[in-house]
Structures are given as C-alpha cells and as structure tokens.
Length: 522
Image (cartoon, rainbow, N blue to C red; front, side):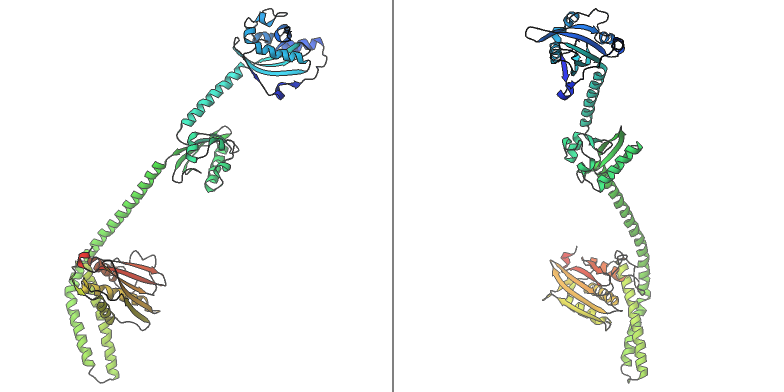
C-alpha cells in the first residue's frame, strides 16, 4: 500500500477488533471475489530490519481496483518492494510502514482501520489492514477522496455560514424538530445574556422558560415545521430587554427551523409616538370643534340673554316688589283660613318668581364678560347671608367650620355670594329626597382661600362627570344647566378654580380656590 503522511487513527476499540479465522474456501470463489470486488485489495509481506522494525513490504498480490486507485496501471508489482514501485514511498510513508509492521507482528486475527491522505497521489484512502498470518498483511483500500472533499467543503461552508450568522447584528438561532437549539449567534448572546454553550443542545423551554410568551413562540415554531410556511410577527423576545421589540421571521430549514429577530425598538417607538400624536390631534380637533360649536351656541345665548335682561328683568323686579308689599299688607289682616290660603299663594308665586330671577341672572352672568369689583369682603358673613336666603328642608342639616381668626379678602363679594349660593343650593337639592348633611369649611393655603362644600347626596355618576361644568347640561328635571357653568366662570374670573370629588350614593365635595388679593390673580 502506498499511503500517507496524515493518518487518522480511531479509538482503540474501533481500531482493533478481533476477526475470526476465515473459513477455508475454494480457489474459484476466492479468485472471483478478488477479481470482482470494487475496493482495492493487496496482499503483502512485511520486511523488517535487524532491530525488528518494519522498513518496507513486498507485493504478493494486488487486484485491478488497487492498481487503479493507487495509479499503478499495468506496471509489474508482484514480488517488488513498495519502495521500488513508488520512489517517494520511504520518505512519505514511514509511519504507514511502522503501523503495518505492528499488525504483521501481532499474528492472525488483528485488524486496523485507517483513514489518511497520500500527498504524492493526491488521494484520501480508507484502509482495513489485517494480518492473515504472521509477517504478512492484507489491506482493503477505498478511495474516499470525493467524500473527504465534500466534508471539507461542508466544513468551509459551515465556517462561512457561522461567520456570516455571527456578523448579523440581530439575534439569529436555529432549532431542530425537537425544539432543541443547534445554532446561537453572538447577537443572541448580547440581547438575551445567555451564552451559546448554555443554549446549544437544550430545549427551547429550558433556555427561555415556560410562560405565556414562550408558549406562543413554541406554537408558532411547531406550526412552521408542520406546514413549511414561513411566519413573520412582532413581539418581545423572551429573556431580552423588556422595552425591546423585534420583528421575528421563522422559516423551515430541513427538519427544524431558523429564527431571525430584527430589532425594531426605535421603529416601534416612532410608531407609538405617531399613534399618540394622531390621537392627540384627533382630540385637539374634537375639542376645537366642540369649542367652535359652543362659541356659536354661546353667541346665540348672549344675544338671547341681552333680550331677556331688557325685556324680562325690569317687569320681574316689579313683580318681586309687589309681592313684598302684598305679603306686608296680608300680615296686618287677622288670622283666618282665607289669610293662610292667600299667604300660601303669595309665597308660591314669590318662590317661582325668584327662580325665574335666578335663571335670568345665571344666563346674563354666563353670557356677558365678567369684571370683578374688588372690595373688602368677610367670607364668614357672606356664607351666613347666603344661608339665610336659602329654603333649607327640615331633613337637611347645614354646618359651617373655619380656621380662626379668618382674614378679610379683597375680592368681589357678589361673585363670592353667587358661587356659594349656587353650590349650597345644588348640595341641598342632591339631598331633598333622603335628607342628609351639608358641610361648609373654609381654610387658607399659601395666598389662596379654600372653600369646600360637601353633601351626603346621591353623588355624580361616571357618565356625566366630564360634563357638569358645561353650559346647558343638567341632570335635573327642573333646570337649565347654567348653575355650575356660571360658578366655574365666576371662580376663574376671580383668578381661582373649582374642582370636585364624588362617590355615587355617598355624596360630592366641591373645592373652590380663590386668591386672597387681586395681585394673586392667575
């Protein structure tokens, strides 16, 4: 055999195996097998030097495939040394000769399997060398050059593939049909914090855990393996940063899948920003449209309020004056059933007339520009005066508390009176059926007076909370929807504001903030 510079020896258990003594065969059978086998066969006698080291071997017999794969052709070789047939033999095949010598010295039944490259012949060979009798070797050679070149090409291709995959800046990994990882690039290590060695060969759930996201991924992976149809979807990647979004492509590769996850975090943020910006624009358009509609409606209200102010207010004041005189004259009559019935009628007319007067006042206050008339104002006296003008049912109790001493305010007393009157009246109306308690409390904070008016009424439902300060909106069967709108406008005209806290069936608290001095106006 003319072999090799590079010899790849397998594990001892694979290299040496016991071969039973072949059974005696007829010369005809042996000759047919020797002639027609596709692998090269050579029978050789090993030559040893005086020290017992193998230095060469003599060809005793070779078949045609052996001549072909070792490029002997028709050259006579029987009875010749290998070094005579191949001039380069001793220089390049010394390791091969030593190994053949060891096999020949072991005696019958020993076999060695070798793979190696013969540079002079530019061939890869797989050789089974065994000892049919001591001092002799028989070898069966296979030309595996094509296979080794294919393997080498595959190794080069695999290196290039891994190099390409590792050059990808996005996570890229592959799984087999059992969902075990068989590839894991450096970008995947970077994004997940999991080393390649800790992922390869392990199941998907062992690496990424078993949770809602990982179960969803596993379902998609199995579907792609089953249908061979690629899938693309956007999601977070298990174990990656919580704020990182990926566009994930899954496609079938042989018996498994490959997964490429492109980082689209910035694109996702831009998309979310655009969606939020669009929503803000839509809301702005809605608000502007609503304001425009309100402006048109308020312009009509203002025009109507002007007419009401001139055409209704003057006769209304005359009616109120006449009612006052009528009550005064009736008080001088002796107490009779007729007097009582007349007093009831006059009081009913007066109540309704005052209600009409309130509607006209609210309408005018809301429609006209408000200019506060600043004066020294006692908040305590104003609250007391408002309380005396209200008709409080017997089942409603009103309480008042304040820090002492409470300072004088520089504000518009009429504005304050209108604010308190409307809010206290609303609180009483919220408790008309079941009764309850209305508490007015005043305090100071920085340069502002804080007035809270709390009732234990029905509260304000979620459906109407955003509408109660809008004009012409009311939940009452008897109301025009100007009371709270006027309060808000009056408070803002004084440089303050109003807000509320409410719980359904437990009551509502209105909080009014008014600056103590004109220079605190906002």
